[in-house]
Image 1 (cartoon, rainbow, N blue to C red):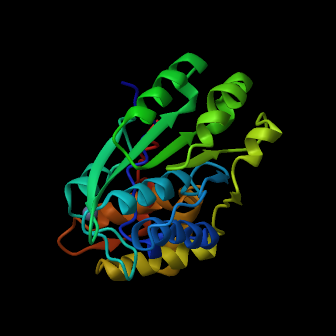
Image 2: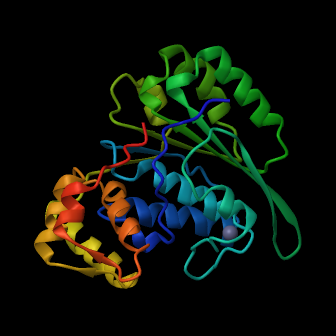
Length: 266
Ligand SMILES: [Zn+2]
């Protein structure tokens, strides 16, 4: 078993994502189509953007929603408490996750399959896809992480044909679309570019997260500095928020921001 990069951060709800509204809207739509309307459409999506924009977190949140046994069909948020939600609450591991969802008149198997393309060669991919095809899943969500690392052969031969199978939702994520063949790119009906938030947007978002958790903050400057120190990555900035929330009198001080040793999860 291989382990993909750990980000330690999975927002509880769709509203907790920052600066990626288009992607959130699109992913929530996927949840509605699969879980509420139960339609069989081609929902494959390519997300391109720098590290820290929340690509992997979005896919994991989508996986949680598609596999959650107690999904809230109004807000389309997962319960964050069932076995699947627990299982997927941390972004690590490369194992398939499987669940059986009750609908009014039937039960449908859902499967999530994370595939780390940096560690998957053509042969391994073929084996993995073979396993997926014979798995009991009816709704199969496959995440091709770092999709740019797929060899051309894997794109054209190993993936394009299996990708046409209905019942699969393919989500490709990566830093750029460089190296991806035109035929492969065309296979994703939706392609979205992800960007990091600017400093003030991130600081405002952090202020909201602090308020929700009852955490005081010395000043807005402190949160702006935290945004800078986090390289504008919300997941890194939240490490300090999480740390503050463990105190008896939760507060974020300038000193904490300056001295925090970030866990880059690599
Ligand atoms: Zn759940």
